[in-house]
Image (tube, rainbow, N blue to C red):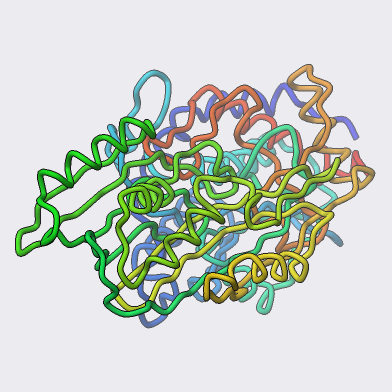
Length: 474
């Protein structure tokens, strides 16, 4: 079928200012999951965000549905099969270190800044605008096209489970929530909780009363703190010891006197996505290593020793005995996302992304063997198996054809550690919107989307819809 791609491209260019404006409007809604309310399973802000997204699509002439505020969808045309695009409207917490307003949508240096600009509100709008361009260009479609907006991608994807129970899922498609050129393999995911019951008020020169780090397993924490006792060591002496360790370890640590014989030791790291822990600096690891080096302890001492000896700052689980890799899906990653100690009970949560060559059972057995000698327990609190869509499938071939033709590259599919909506629908891969030469600012402070690249992604998505939904690629 002949497709007028020049007409599609002209429509994409003409919508640039509208797209920028909509990204700013969407980013202004702080759609972090919160306490459920009546008819709002992920909280008021997520419900408000879904209303805004569907209202935006309706204003451009599309049919929409709200599926109980778990998710919503936007439809174009119909046919025996449906091409789907799965994007999400929820965002991770802001975290520390921002220099731009997290929900301000500020434009600077050709970028729009704000939480959700690249993960995933900006790309979701790219997909919506691609649908507009294809429709306005009059491309005849054999298959229907459906854009699905979810509201719980960051914390479990229960939205898609509910959606699939209510609505037939599309037959094939992509999620604009990762990287170009194309991801056809997503590593398996495993969340593991390590727990330890404290040994009581054991004597210690610097007793630890509390440790707090991280909010979510899939985020490398940028801040961590511990409340310690200073009755046996002055605050000034503690400050000197912490400063000496910080200089030696080349890490950022600080001490604050809380009075009443207590002080706070805090650690500063660098936020990053939990699937790429090597790109961040884990403040929890920085703090635990510092506490161990200071000889701090009390009832948490055995757990502290375990965390330093079996995790530390490692991004690959080597000391836990779970390091592994294969040619297709590469290496295992391990992120220490959450740490808690309340004076009696210690817990920490690991976010592990594992390659095709590993399995949950094998990993759990090795982790248990590593932590049991310290008196700790290891519990599997959730996970998913790896995703692999063969390179021969039409969705892989078709999307790569479009990408390579428009960019002049000769790219091949790749594997990632992150988990996307692709695993929630058959024959689905992740496709953009971060280009190979771009910084990945997903989940980090000062998240942004580059405006020119946003327009380029919209053009690629429009061509992909036209090629695949028209039946040109089978």
